[in-house]
Image (cartoon, rainbow, N blue to C red; front, top):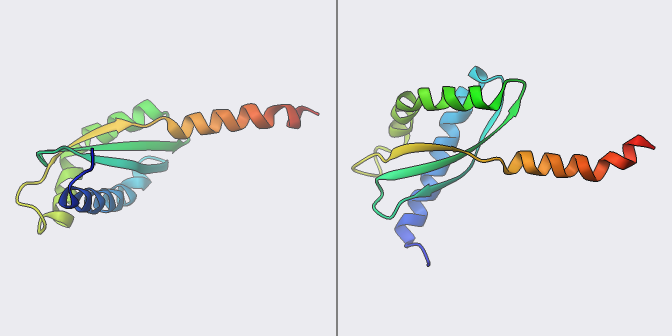
Length: 116
């Protein structure tokens, strides 16, 4: 099903804005925290933010800290997009393990070459 033009545009705007907010908070997490994708619901009330993390801290700890900071992140997000929409969507953070999968596949592929 094709998304509406407005929904696509808002999703792109929200993705850029939440990426900027997360980049500003990155120093608190001791690694690289990135927004993989965002998904806006049809009623514009909820924004699902898919995050990936690569760094020295445990992923679960970092993700829990992000969830704890959700109100603060939403306020900063609202400051960036508040002029565009009447109601700021609720943020729902989801850990995306696709980066971990790619790293594991790369290790499996390059593993035998490194042993020789």
